[in-house]
Amino acid sequence: MRQQRSFCGIPLSVFAGIVLAWGAAAATAQELPHPSAEKVRVNVYRYKKYVGKGIRPSISCDEKDTARLQSGRFVTLLLTPGKHTFRSNDQQSQIELDLKPDQQYYIRIDIAVGMWKGHGRLTLVQPEQGVAELKEMKPADSGMIKDRELVASDVQSK
Image (cartoon, rainbow, N blue to C red; front, top):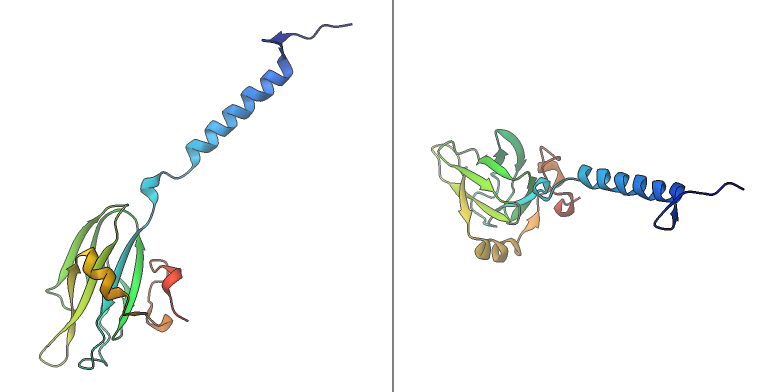
C-alpha cells in the first residue's frame, strides 16, 4: 500500500486545496471596491413659497443638467468623492465643493429677482440647518429629473 505524504499531519492534497482556496479569497478581497468609491449625498432643495411658484430653476452638476426644482421640493444627488461644481440658471452663482465620503451636503436654491423673470441662486447650507429644512420638503417630481444616474432612487417620487 502506498503511503500518503503529509504536512503537519494533513495530507498534501488537502493542504494544497486549503492553500488554493486561501489564495482565491485573497484575490477576491483585492477586487472589492475601496471605501473611497462610495457615493456622497448632496441634497439640493428649494423653499416652498408662493412668490415664484411657477419658476423651476435648474440644478447642474459639473455642467450636466441634473434636475429642475419646483417650490417646496428637493433632489438628492449621489456623487463620487472629489471636486464638483454646482450651478443653477443664475450665471453669477456657483458652488465648488470638494466632497468627502463621510459627509452630507446641503444646497438651497433661492429665487433671485431678474429683469424679466426670476432665476435660481445657490447657497451652501450648514448640515444642521439643511437637515431641519429638508424635513419640510417633498421629493422632486420624476418629470423634473433630467439625469437619473446622478439622482438617488430612494428619494424620487412617482
